[in-house]
Image 1 (cartoon, rainbow, N blue to C red):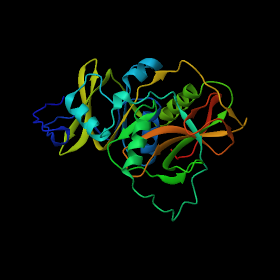
Image 2: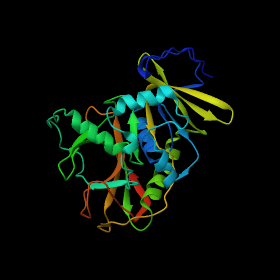
Image 3: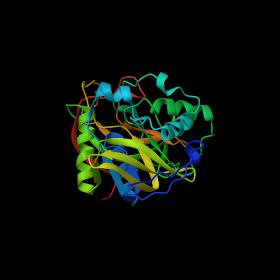
Image 4: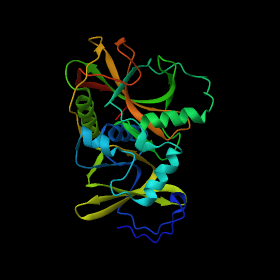
Length: 297
């Protein structure tokens, strides 16, 4: 177990003398849609990954607590998150109704030589404000570590994407179908999924997040993340299934979406097929769990 011999002058200057219970390349703090999508993407890039899995929550409870926090209010972790949020009042951000956003985005490709969009701090702030209240939002502790493709959504927004797999439309619950497909992929990949009671805190060293401590029935479990940590939401039980009109054979791609120079992202469904409804970020019901994976096992 970890021993804390730290002195604290803000979350980014904490030092630790630790004995780790486990050590991997990437730690995903829960096994919801964002956690499993991030874990699969990391494995596709050769990483050794541990996924924590805490008890499921109802949608309303999941939204009330959110993923951008730790339940016990650990001071060092909360100060670190507040620093990344900047001047955003995360408690005042409107809760997203998008359990799983969908928007029209062409298939990535043909982007060689694509100009890098100019850096605008306000755009990154706006992006963080969209990801933090999203049930499929996440924070990755290092910038620019995914094998990404740059593309533009139909509305012209420049985004960076990592495609995980695709679903075919049918009838059913979009969130449940996506979660079930990711569960099946995680099993086929042999992902290391560890049952826990919850995330206790992030662990800091030399100004960076170097791991996480989880509550378990046997006491704290502290895991080192050699490469990075993905902070994300719990699994939740969908309580409704909104509908959107899409072509009957439309393919919907499960995608990690980010912005250049941002640590924040969220999982979205992308389609090249016609969509009847507002976008970006509208919900889609009517999916099945039949899917094909774009990566290699």
